[in-house]
Image (cartoon, rainbow, N blue to C red; front, side, top):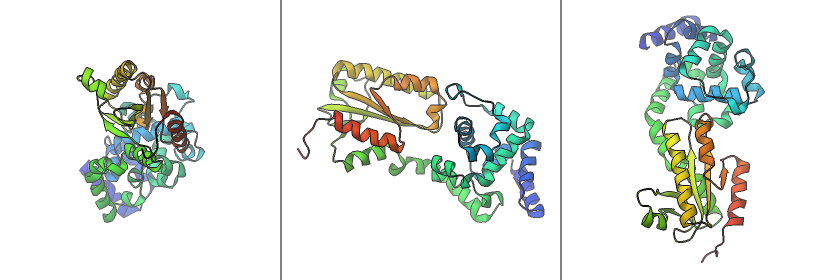
Length: 294
């Protein structure tokens, strides 16, 4: 891959930055796609997510940029399953329009408003022509993003729970985090720390769990089973409490069987869409009984 990138750099220096160079890279080199991803710092998992987004979205500009009608059959949104590496590699080798679409994504993807609203800015910045030109500043940027991705994702302000915390604090709604006391006493080996307990551990009227996933993993099945079990224990010890979930992210979309099992555990489910956030505010106000400033 290192040699492939050096040859690619030489082609660009002698011929100029042309999409055809990258199309040939994807077609002729066995590790061409991996090389392109390495150059831009774009994860293979992230590329899979974008391909899935293209398949399920009806955004005309994005569909046109990636020639969606040339490689994607009409699919029922409910039946969409994420494509594996072998399917993507096969399309790259056998469908010229799919190759062109992938190259267009890296050349022009950052200019599509739909993608700028869908992708985190940290990821969107990787779709940059300067990276394809092998510009030093862009390569340094790629190195830094490789190094800092884990710590960036782990920062509190980038955690979806931080948004819920902010929403509650803005409305002066009391909450705590931690163990439900009855579960701690009676189901210690099965209980888990809850994300938000409104208004308190002693009097939990609304119990909130949050799960935002961009990637997929085998652990999603276990997580959904865990929530179903938590639901049963809440029914037993806190029958009046509402158990709600914030579930979002393309990682859940492409594991729909786990998603279905997950949402069945909750009384209501919210996403982080603006309209859903507003619905959540109304939900809390109508289901929470507490004395302000008490």
